[in-house]
Image (cartoon, rainbow, N blue to C red; front, side, top):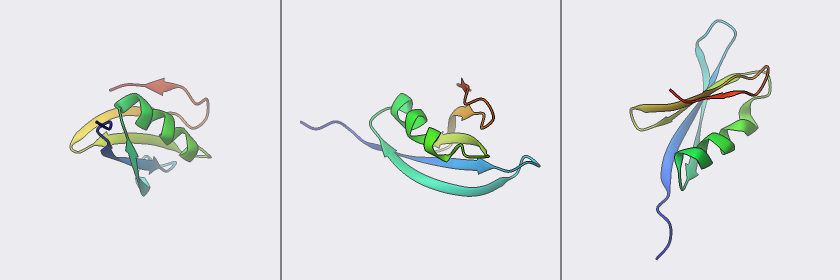
Length: 68
């Protein structure tokens, strides 16, 4: 059997703290989704959501990861 893949939303956060764009990614785990979200850090902080659950936050300036 294959691995279950879930849909995640990666929200880019602008300087004023507002969402400026969203991307959909598919990953086998929350950790994989967080790794995929790193590609969007260029000048933005990002939040990663699975459905209505926020699973993490990445800071664009130092690329540190925080789970929420």
